[in-house]
Length: 188
Image 1 (cartoon, rainbow, N blue to C red):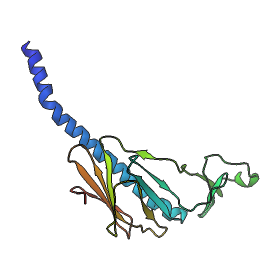
Image 2: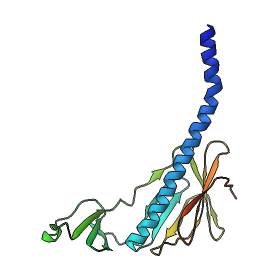
Image 3: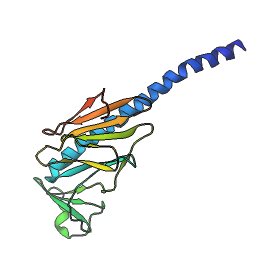
Image 4: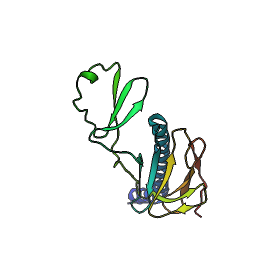
């Protein structure tokens, strides 16, 4: 009985600390994933030479990247201006366009992610708000940050919340589109 009591006592004392650590790791992981998505949006805007948008849906707790104002066709989304002839296919299937794609040394096929690829936040982490550089604060509906072909963006600060009072923020610089952590971020 004494051994069982000691085991139960040790689990009871250690469990709250373990849960706090676990929830903190989820918040750090989700923050890292969002920062990677921000960098990917910047990279896609530069490589494609077309504006890209990072959309944050506060009601669904999801975010995704999309290319605004793009005319969608059956298979070609955009022809990229690279040193080789490159085509992006939205559905991942290369159409039969003759013998021009047989020489892969001069023709590259780049598969694009579908526009509907969304990342869902892992509970208890949630999107709290987006504060744009002009001071506009969005905490409901869908808000966006645009990334431009020259490497700049609209900029802003994204606040993520965890369990309890755990919060972290990501600040996106408008000139470089680089993100940095704001560990003591607060809501406005």
